[in-house]
Length: 239
Image (cartoon, rainbow, N blue to C red; front, side, top):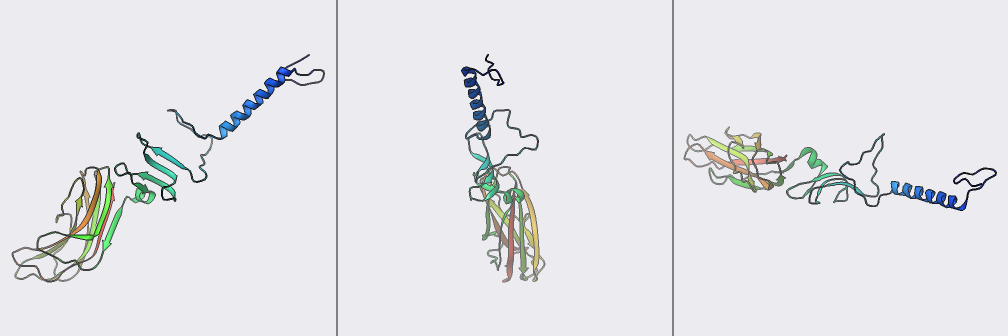
C-alpha cells in the first residue's frame, strides 16, 4: 500500500509522492533564499515595517537614500559623496550635499583682522575678506556681525560714527544699512560689539553675504585720520 508523504513499517511511498515531496522541499529552499536576499525590489504604498525589535543593516558601504519626485537625491544615510559615513540632506535649490553639522547648526561664517581703511565719508566699503556663500529655500537668514571700532576726533563739533554691517547679493539684494550694523560713536578708544539681524522675504537661490564698513560725521567736516576697524566677524544662519 502506498501513502504519499508518509513513511512507516509495512508500506513505502510511490514514486510520484517522492517527486512531489522533493519539489516541495526545493520550493521551500528557494523561498528561504529569496527572503534573505533582495538584489533589486520595490515596496508599494503600504511601506515596510520592522517589528519585534528587528533591525535594518546596511553593509559594505551602502546607503539608505530618499529621492525626490524627479529622482534626485534628497536625504542620504550611510556612505556620503565624500567617502565619509554620516547623514546629509541635499539643498533643494543648489543640489549641494549638506552634512550633519550644517543640518544641526545651519551656519557658515568668516572673519578678518587688521585695520580697514575708512574711505569716503558716508559711503559703505565692502570687506572682501569677510564673505560667505549660503543657500536658502525658506526665505530667511539670520546674520550676525561683530567688530572692534576705534575712532579719532573729527574737526569742529561734529559727532563721529563708525559702522560695521553687511550686504546681501543674490536673487533678492539687501543693501548695507546703519540699522543692522555695529555702531560706535564713543571717541578715540576701542569699542567692541555685535549685532544680530533676521532677514526675511528672500527669494530661493544662492546668496553672498559680505561685511560692509562706513564712517561718517554729523556735520560737513571731514573724517579724522584715525578710524580703525579690526577683529571683524560674520556669521550666517540659513534656515
